[in-house]
Amino acid sequence: MGIFNFANPFVLANRGVMGMNQRNFSYISRYNKRELYPNVDDKLKTKHLAIGNGIAVPELIGVVRFQHDVKKVFDLLKRHQGFCIKPAKGSGGKGILVILSTDEKGYKKASGDYVSKDEIIRHISNILAGLFSLGGASDVAVIEALIEFDPIFDGLSHEGVPDIRMIVFQGYPMMAMLRLATHASDGKANLHQGAVGVGINIATGKAKHAVQFDKPIKFHPDTEQPLDQVQITNWESLLRLSASCYEMSGLGYLGVDIVLDKTLGPLVLELNARPGLAIQIANGMGMLPRLKAIEALAKARGFKARPDVKQRVDYAKSQFND
Image (cartoon, rainbow, N blue to C red; front, side):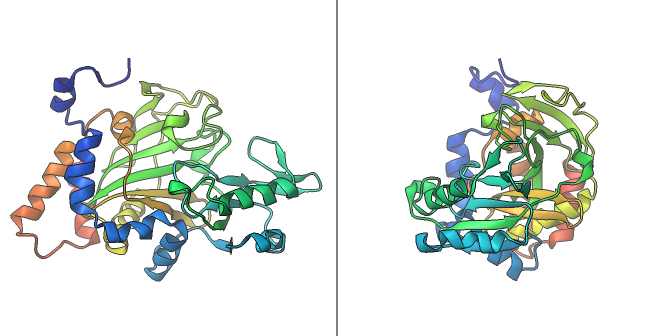
């Protein structure tokens, strides 16, 4: 049995757990205008929007838009030992190819396997054809510089880059989890694929709870590193970065994915207008009490005089400390 007793709706309600229908109708439909979805469903649009708003993102190496340009990608890659190729409209980590280094054998993945030039071409062609995109629509391939993750994550992630998912409601960062890749997740950071989710205290940036496949765990399944010792450095800047995405996107209920680069610091990887609910399992608590507290704040001030980023972060740190 998982951390929550999913067979008993009364237990879930008492623990403030939000279900899928409630998320869709009470929060996503209510607070996210549909005309703003393309800004986050298209990762290339998100990147340009972020750059325009002064929000740090991974370096854009190039974009492949047409099939007749696919072979030209190797000209773009000449100056980069490592890189990431992803579909602009992909979801759930599908279609993301990460290359750590390049040598005479080809392009090396985190698993140690090599990818040939022909496989790179085939992968990009599949992206353009919409194999990984939402609804199967034609797409473009986005090529980004490789993230060199912060040393604080050494031994905590296996064959993949760890990221931090933050739920931001009305501009308030209100729940967070660290996602760690595993062998079972094939280096991906998606919990449903077997990644580890570590709930993070909003006030301190310290780990408080961890799960894999919905069950509590104490150690990373591949590296055996203890998960309760995780302390994310520069936590205040992560909170402010995620809170700033509210103004950038205009979305009231938002998932912000952040990576920590050892040189560049926190970078926004992507935004999500329909963030999943597994973050509640990783934190061992429901998010409804926090959502309602923030709604009450907006109501109390008559939905006027929106607090700035610092004020919202200060509130989150003072109220969501557990």
